Image (cartoon, rainbow, N blue to C red; front, side):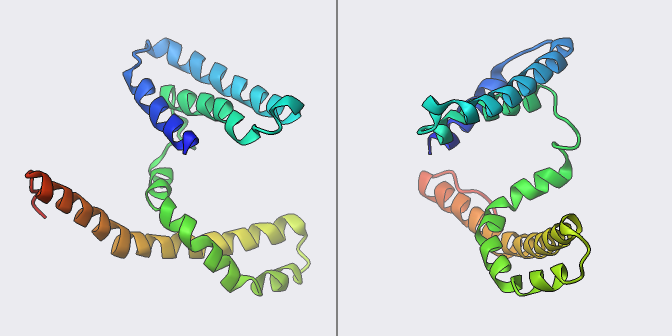
Length: 163
């Protein structure tokens, strides 16, 4: 929960900051480079070993702010926005998909294409199924649930919304 709360806090801070356009790229590079250094350093600092999970908030916060200042098209795009939209469904569905296709993985490895190609094929198969099923779950379960939640909140607060 502290990580999620920290992310919300950073989002509002990043939106409130007004930074000149010329400085945004410099800050983005600086934040992301510092994040890479800190990520590596935190892994090596024994004193942070016990709180490693929470200490990772710092480098990931820097990456988050860096991407807010200067979004890289490879990381901030309609495709990644879509994956963000269906991410909760992906989180719920991926173990079931992996469990369902686990017998296929050895068959792919038996093709003797090498470890990188075998892993890539297994990942592509799994991601294809997970993204497809997650899209359907979002469309037919999550989206109606979100609409119902908004309607109920509006209904009970006196600000009823149109469907």
